[in-house]
Image 1 (tube, helix red, strand yellow):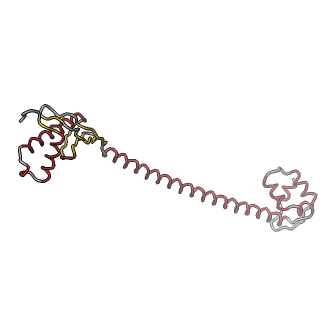
Image 2: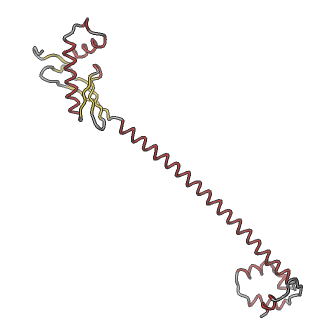
Amino acid sequence: MELIELGRAKKGEEKELDPALVKAILSRAPRSPFIVKRAELLGEEVLSGSMPRSLWAGATVKSMGVKGLEFADELSEVKRQVDDLNSQVESVKSELQQCKEGISTILNELREKPIIKQTELFEMDETLEVIRPIPVVIEEYDDEVIATFPEIEAFGVGLCEAEAIIDLKSEIRKIFFELEELGDKELGKLPLSWKRVLSKVVKKIGNVQ
C-alpha cells in the first residue's frame, strides 16, 4: 500500500520520505533488475536519510536515459560489425569468382594444348628401306593426331597415332620420289636440303619406280 500512496503524490510535491518507510518498501519490493539498479544509483542517501520524491523520480529517469544511450551504442557497434562482416563476405565472393574464372581459363588452354611426344620410324614399306631411324614428333589433340618429320616438313594426320604415322610414311615416300626425279641443279635450296636428309635415312628397294 505504501507504493500506491507514493504513486499518488502530486507532481512537484517535495514531501520528505520516512527512512523506515523507504527501507520497508525496498525490503518488500521484488528484486527486479530495475529495483536493484535504482537502489544502487540512490545508495546510502535513500536508506540512511530523507529524500524528496522528485529527486528519486529524477534519478530513475536518469538511470533509464543512461541505459538507453548504452543500448544505442551497443546497437551501433553491432551494426558496424555486421557491415564489416558483409564487406568481408563480398570480398571473399569476389576472390572466389576470380579463382573460378582462372581455373576455367587454364582448363580451356589445357584442352587446346596438344600432348607432344617423340618416336622413331624403323621401317617404311615395300618401296623404301629405312637405313637410319627417322625421328618423328607426335602431337595428340582432342579430335586428331599429327605425326611430323620436322627435317623435311612432312606430316601425316589421323584419328589415332597409327593412322597419323601411316599417312606420314606415304608423304615421305611421295617427297622422296618427286625429288629423286629432279637433278640437284633443278632444285631450290630448301628442296635440295630435303633430298640430302632423305638420302641419309631411306633408300629405294631394288629397281622400284
